[in-house]
Length: 481
Image (cartoon, rainbow, N blue to C red; front, side, top):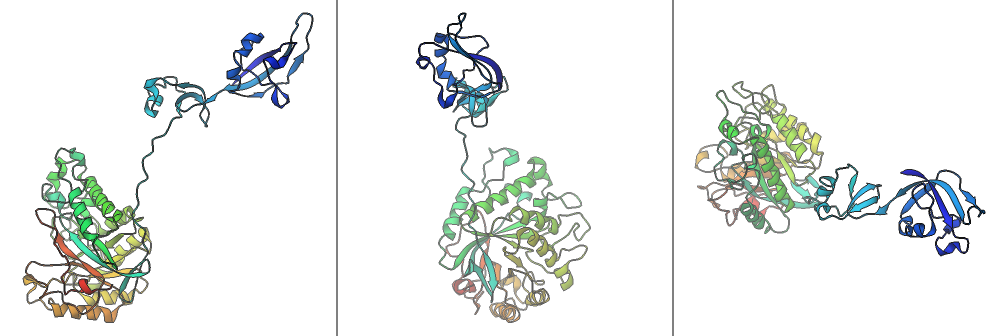
């Protein structure tokens, strides 16, 4: 904005020859403070239309005098000479009315305009703004549970799919076959963040074939120490060497998990996030840990882990939370409520609920026999009837390693489901099943419908995706959720 004294001259014979005064007042010209003749003024008319102005003092009209044969208007104005600009502009208002536009070839992008073309510090980019496409969001879903059934958007559904492996121990051996894209030309600080596109396409294509009434699902086993960047061992954790070689390996692990979740859920595949290990120095702790492991060594807290994980995925309705993979602890009180060393199911449940609300599904694994225990689940349900959207888990392994273990048989599994159904209305989800020495004719024969299951494990190549992950006589094949 500038203030100037402007004098407008009017020819005696016909002022309309060179000037027009709409609205009862003159259209002012923002010029110098010298007087102007007709020819000079008329050559600037094109600019007058671009001037925005306000009168800052009263106008004074001067009639023709002997000493001055032309009438003239003498006034002070405050004005801004501006024009709409659709490129790099200078001295612009918020609507891109600018004092000037720069059409130079080297100033035709926002970066150029505000960079090399902004030596005076008064440039504004008024051209087209490049906008990226909005980030796609996974489908919304409303989950409920009732009468041993899982409902999605009010309809009874079954979950069926795969439980992948290697994400629970990935960082101890970066070179293993895995779900991340093996591209050793990538930067060391971004090596393992991207899922293998061929594997993702294969699983999504396979799971897209599920029949009506089935929600496809993938279970991702995780290591809390990787996610929380905690190395817990007397002589250094198993992944210490890899962490020294590849910067921010914990951050890369988080990015990989987030990208796996994003790709699968965008395709309508539900994802079960499973706390499989607190740290990778021990194959499987008897229960989820807090700040130290059984040997008194600092470890990743399951409470902190679930707080972080559930906050990360809180807006994704297709993410479910399996609080701990395979408890095998003697104390019901510790399993349910925790103690100084172990995180209880109720403690982890509350942390997750605080972040995700009541809609998300939370899976709870039984106290004993590596998630093969009905009594603890029924007692927990009876003592805590207000828990929302709970699904009970089970791992009905019954091959040669389980030979002689009470209940680890087809009849034993049927009895376990009978017991769960008699004592609770919660659905049951088989979060792991499948053994090489246990055919469909020998295992998993169950007389009940169920909430489905995930085949364990689905490995990255050279292993292959099975032609049919569902034993034909299992609860998975006949389940109606």
